Length: 576
Image 1: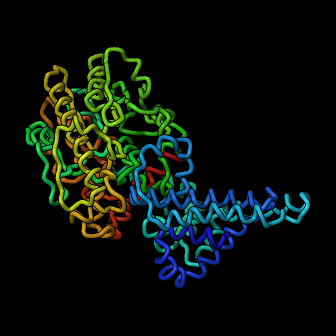
Image 2: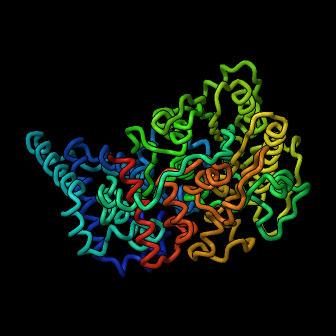
């Protein structure tokens, strides 16, 4: 059975034939390690439960669940199942609601075999032929071996190195899982579960680097404007898919507002695709990089104390800071972490207590139009300058039968899409038009205000309108899934900064901005001053205009050294 489970896991990771023909013959040491690990785990459970059929049934469920999770997550987001995803198990009911994907025939066959296999030992096999005083100590000893191995990176790294597994490969998880297989890659990720100290890091070195940049106070004409930051779920320009014909223009407001004198727009380089909102959100609010954290980690799960952020920066300038999200407060651990970023209040389910706003649902969630009503409510009731951060939900996946066809207000056609992708594409475009309309409504509200107000509106990631990038490949939007050119397209969303006062646009001249740099750019546009770290980000932008490890960009030695300071700062903020 462990041999079968390995075949099942690797088949879902790279397809059965590819695993047998390409991976297996070239990676015998890794296969041996994988089997030893699975046999030890199998033995531990067998000695604990004693009955063979319970053992097989347990592992069949566990291995099939891991296989499915890896397959579905990669198909939707281009990322594999990672150890930190297990922490999200508490939100599994909500996550399942987002999933819409068909499985190939062989996947059902493997799952059926795994489950049917539990019947065989139930009929023919005997219980473990050992007394409990032998079984339990052996199970404890084997479990201790596993814990010591994965808990001691020195021991693990020596074994990994000898069989062709390395920690360095974890920088690019896609390549990591392809080259090392699911079990091998997952094992390395478990061993590197804790936040690793960046190479060369020390508190003194970080201070030396940051001391190269001076704190800059707000400019004399800084107007303490209300600041609205809107993370628009999956907001992206669907017209970029070659062959698309969409009427009316779903980006009508974005296009018109971008042409105005008091706006600044461009492409936002984000660390997420098809999902993983929290990564973009973390970088936007803190200026730190998720690349410095364990791969696949939910950033808010590792933040245990107050950390510096753009939120706390404006708090220090006398702002009130409020976050709103018309969904579950506990999702991604926001409820616990937002106060640690500096927010005074966080409204999620509690938005329903605000009787002055009557929300309505669209696409299974609170509409973007209602979301703007909530923003207006908080701004109208503010006594101090407001830093208001909001996360929309209307255009969240899945897109299958998301909107009522009778209420469609946009027509989208792309002959290059297959039937399934075309269906999701049409529904996605409707959501984009609704998001664009909410942007127009919000900016009209801003224009009619006497108080200086600025909004930063952006998408967190491209949509998961297809599995395995089919829509992006079939239309020719990307030519492959690995080149830097294609990766940059898949990790770029639109952003716009719009205000009812004059922006200092001389301070911003970049068409593309990294998500960790967006609110630093805002500070330049409105003259709100800089911390030393924000000054470093200004300098980083000149050396490395934008970066995250998913882009497959080759950096020079100088660029790597300059970028490492950001990892130092992230590590220091989260761990010290």
